Length: 151
Image 1 (tube, rainbow, N blue to C red):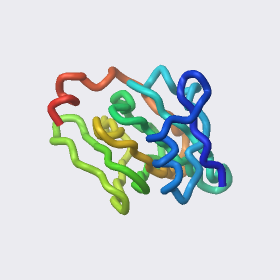
Image 2: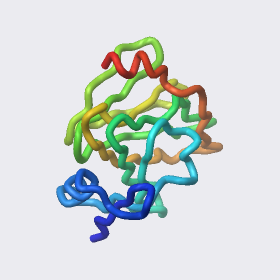
Image 3: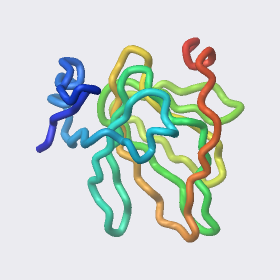
């Protein structure tokens, strides 16, 4: 099982290593391909690419993705299965929900939302891509830092 994680100079941090050591799934590599849609650093480990896409996404403390919407003409959406640490999930116009290991979030197509780590905790969830037709993510604005900091 791969548990190595990196800081900017390529060396693992103690907090990252402790988080990785308690994981069942690998943390993966820096999520550079989607970094522009995240506030902070995240890591991505593809677990399954056939039948259903499943990815372990790990967020450093304070990291969250931008508001976004999953689109599809049929089916689609996303399921989050929280596996380690503490995080947040919020839908547009609703209060944020605290997330802990074992929590599951079903995100329908067309719902504007964000998810990420608590300010003081690493957080990992499995992101399950619900199969659909013409699926895409619409990435939107970053989460307001003041609103996030008030959580």
